[in-house]
Image (cartoon, rainbow, N blue to C red; front, side, top):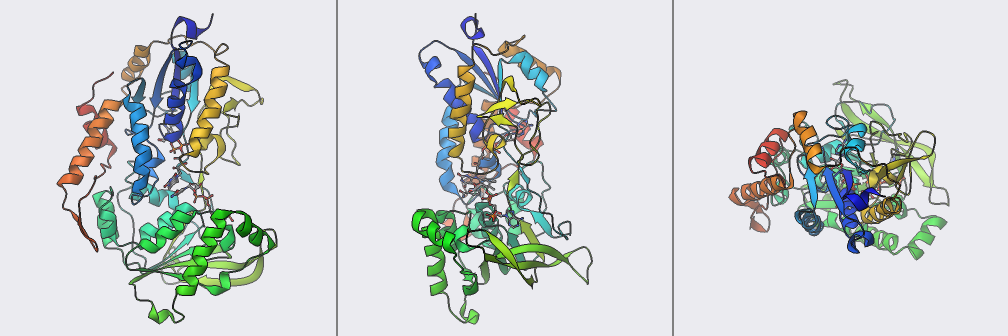
Length: 481
Ligand SMILES: Cc1cc2nc3c(=O)[nH]c(=O)nc-3n(C[C@H](O)[C@H](O)[C@H](O)COP(=O)(O)OP(=O)(O)OC[C@H]3O[C@@H](n4cnc5c(N)ncnc54)[C@H](O)[C@@H]3O)c2cc1C
Ligand SMILES: NC(=O)c1ccc[n+]([C@@H]2O[C@H](COP(=O)([O-])OP(=O)(O)OC[C@H]3O[C@@H](n4cnc5c(N)ncnc54)[C@H](OP(=O)(O)O)[C@@H]3O)[C@@H](O)[C@H]2O)c1
């Protein structure tokens, strides 16, 4: 007889980013549950006191359209059939052994929060930053320092993905334009005093090989008092580029946008009128971050090797090098997942080894009852919506195996709460998040309106940054379900 027939099937999901929430939602809406054949009891854990993962600590604050997705995820967790335990770190507060004792199945949806490594000389210099760290800072991540050194006038951003565009946009935008969003006060203050005049974004391939998307590219031109600058010599297209432009609408749109911009820009740079500029460079591969001769240990520039397209859409070095004087370098070359205690890890791809979401052990066999979804399953690429497809595949395998799952020894809902309490873990709950959410919105309503070039705009939210404060506000109103 299966567990599911005697009692609800107990499932733990680690990570309350979109992948984890979609997995929980899809499980509750699956056919065996809808038909009444199966009942479930799902607990969703996150190391942060608040839910939503990179939606809260990755998505740029000036992307309010993502709010629609947050509203949908909110509805899922607000139904009351999925318990949320925030401020619980898998690996510290709970082990795999604990989870196996309390749950019949575990889904790891832990995403990625770190930068991929860039192995070039000078990467360790002061003024060389990982984009993921900067993003965490401007999104008010509880575990990063509150101060960020915004003292550079000229900045290089390496990479041609959407994160590079986010970082370049936030660095070049005037702070008051961001004040209408949910940026924390410390971030606004630091951005206000930034002396930046020029942000240079460098892609190692051509305009037809960019990884960013049309909407995000066009958005660059919406920043007030920021001119976009392009370089005609970068507009190289090989056979593969032409094929992409003809067959891929997204590429065609982006190349169209870039070529329109270049046609519209004044030939004489002196005719640019904005106080800040955002430069887009292509076919430049970074080879060294240059140390300052005057202040050794500090970034004084960045050296690139010019690239040429090789006919396949890839590039090769030309042997020509160019230095750009910059005082800060942001490396936006992709995120990378972190190993999870008790599970194998693919150090090359930064994922938990799996087959369609079924976690694999060192012997290459399935680890019974252990699953994965989202970025930690397939790598740090793709939009929020893509994690739904991931979750569907993973929960399909879990449900197919429901008769063979290793039964939990202590499956009661109370047992895991007791365990956390016995360990002194100050976990937060869904009701706690509702309290924190309301608190942040109230801070926004009480704050001075932002004065932008469009006039005064109310602030929608002011994020609470400190973990202690987040937990205190959450737990002040917490009522366990
Ligand atoms: C800077 C940035 C901006 C982005 N902007 C957009 C955008 O505008 N639109 C869009 O569609 N997509 C955007 N994306 C992509 C989107 O964020 C991802 O597709 C999505 O968040 C991946 O979901 P996930 O649930 O796999 O991972 P995550 O969102 O990273 O969630 C993982 C969760 O697991 C938790 N966790 C990790 N380790 C542990 C542990 N040991 N114990 C407990 N919990 C743990 C984390 O705290 C986190 O909450 C952006 C990505 C980045 C990096
Ligand atoms: N607004 C949004 O919708 C939004 C915002 C942010 C992120 N996201 C999504 O989140 C995912 C991750 O984004 P991402 O920007 O981190 O990653 P990404 O899309 O994979 O882009 C990484 C970029 O870094 C470049 N790169 C990698 N290694 C490099 C090196 N050694 N030297 C120079 N350049 C290097 C890549 O160039 P090559 O192509 O040549 O490898 C690519 O241009 C993407 O799917 C993205 O769309 C979405």
